[in-house]
Length: 171
Image (cartoon, rainbow, N blue to C red; front, side):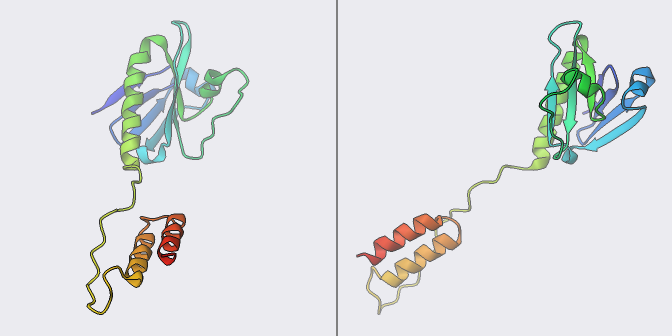
């Protein structure tokens, strides 16, 4: 899969792993400079998007890194700021669809590179402790040991462990 989008101050290609911004011509020379910027999806924390609202307006796409902060206020507006940003490309209304396709593909690749979100701790049941014929069936020691094992595995929070232990010791 290779996506290409032609912008006002640069062209963007995406091969599924790398975003490449290529700049040439007068518009690039007057802003961020002529050349190429190559970013692996693991370097991209988010894809920022500003859609042009009318045929005569410009939008932009920005490939932001993890330490890249979006300014609260920019003189001249966000599009003007993006014109001077090496990780952003301006685009016209008529190119909106190809940039939307590019945005969606890069966002999906960034999410896939980040891996699945952290899930709950493995909550597999603990094996039953071996029965000791000298202990009564509802042994306090065995129950406290089981609670300790559940807390050590992260299945019980410290607060839950303390409440359950108090219940056991209060019998």
